[in-house]
Length: 287
Figure 1: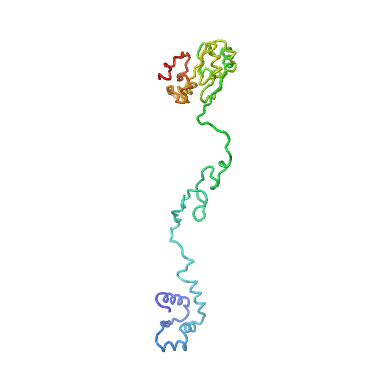
Figure 2: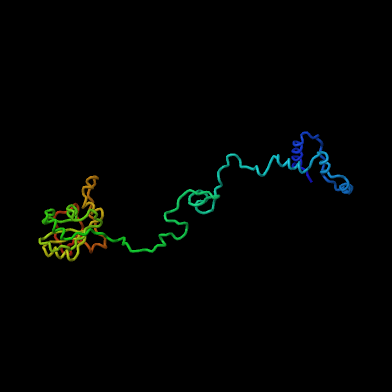
């Protein structure tokens, strides 16, 4: 049964296509429920057959022509003008279509962003597959070694005055040690037989043999503590003067190094030795 607004639209389209055909009123397709109408249904031609006879061409061709020029077709549906933004995805993990992670984003598009260094797509990275070798102590200290034979050679050459205090700055200025001094200087006993006169030194560490050789000649060795900033102020005081800064105060040693040093380092670089005091008058205890 064809009725209502769809039927009117169909009739209007049909009339537009058949502009040359005579305009006739279409029959009423509302079926009657009377018995005479039912018997007449099988005897008289149907309304569609009458319409086909009046129009003079195939009904299938008419439907095909109407579908090609319909007002609304599914394959012509489009968004309103200006609607070009993609729908924002929510609840889809990191990024959610905003391009914050690497890989593929919404609808297969390549997302913007980078992966963190060492990421290999979720598998075990190579840095974890390779075995570890060795151990580096984060609390270890690195000292620049200097032997007594080198000091004796510089004294004989007149570059070091044996009557003055030999500090780490003196050793650096006379090229007894290198320029790369990390945590201080360590005195070793190589060439101890060349020390025939008393000398006084201030270093960070000293071996047992070197200390015994210096004390046997009438000299002394004091183990002093300097932190990183204090060591720079000792070796390069001109840097602070260039920057217009004052020299820092000497730092106290940490608890784990108190038993390994004799006193706190002095700033600026000292030129005279200080005598050793009894244990109860140790400078570390008094400061």
